[in-house]
Image (tube, rainbow, N blue to C red; front, side):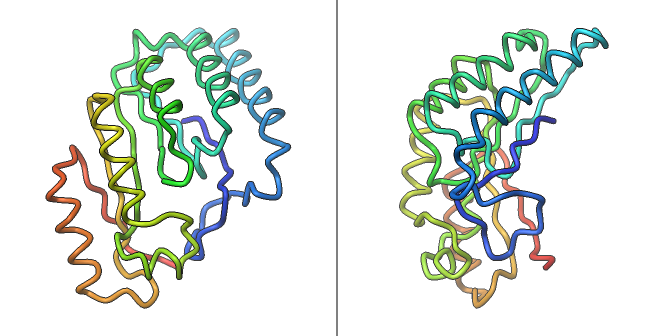
Length: 190
């Protein structure tokens, strides 16, 4: 697991250790370098192989495009992606997904991505401070399909503030209709 504990904004429901990167974006290059040094040190001393790699957050796609490429390519200069059965990157925040980042992930051998709208109700998205719309999710999902990732996961959260059963049902029905490889449903636990 490689953790990127930064997001462009903090969702109102979030209980993870993460920072709203809008006030900390200047830290991202230094953080990236530190993580790459730590990974390199680990593999220099342990000499182990891994079968599954998950890059999660926060939001790993929070980096601007060039820094994202430098970070992801740096990871795979240290860790040989050829020997890893599953590589997952959480591209959870739709306000951070770009064609450039998806190309980098695909080129580096990432086999599974997570695109996490949490809900497809624009009213709920605004209420929980997600900085995207349901339409943004559909565009990002379609773009990921075009890149041909082996597995696409989507996350939804049941029980978001002021979201009705009908809102959640519409979200889950829409997601099912897209036929993602995985659907993860979390319950709000705050």
